Figure (cartoon, rainbow, N blue to C red):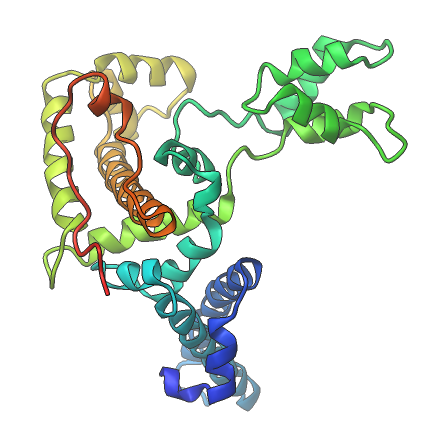
Length: 322
């Protein structure tokens, strides 16, 4: 049931014609169904020596069928696109992540890879203030008087959003500015959470599957982690460790606090930095591939290479592909 052949010819043809929003829905459905299938099977195992209820077995089987059907359809969707075929050729990327990348990223809205990094929540300069900070910001800025466009613009300066965008979100259907709508606008997540989760899954896949097959990004992850570990041991991140201690009150016996007190970052944070760097490099390669596929020319060189003289470039492997 888990192969493309389990889909009828008509369904395979339909999968080729999926729109971006439909593909995103199937990606979300796949991971939701996968979680539910795992939960159902865990419940069956929890029965121990007792025979599980027939309904549990029926539910688990149906989750499996739906999960495999989504995966098969997304495989067809990805293989039907040149960029998708390149994605499927990358060690550690399967049909669901490949289709998710294609469905979430519109190259016509991303002239540089920085646009993709921000959209995926991988730009450290982009901060999400959340609901509580948004409420306080609105209260401190606007007081109890009439809400004005100037007040809204002032609030927007504390977020990654443009003032005109926040103004549009803060108006009701009648065009009146409202505090509750302004608070909701300011507390919006400034990135695409679906794409961010996909990037997290991708980083995990690169790490888990490194060292096997035609591995590229897992190897680069190992290199980057060794680099980050060396800098950490040399005390190069002491200022970040001090900032972390000042920002949050850590429990005494945690490994994190011990590392910060020693002027080091915790090992888990070093690992996360290496994963994030690897995923961002992959997205840079994906941007290059998407841009060249769409415009038949390579994207402009990054600023650090075109203006600052940085010559080292890690190129995407396997592109162009047939």
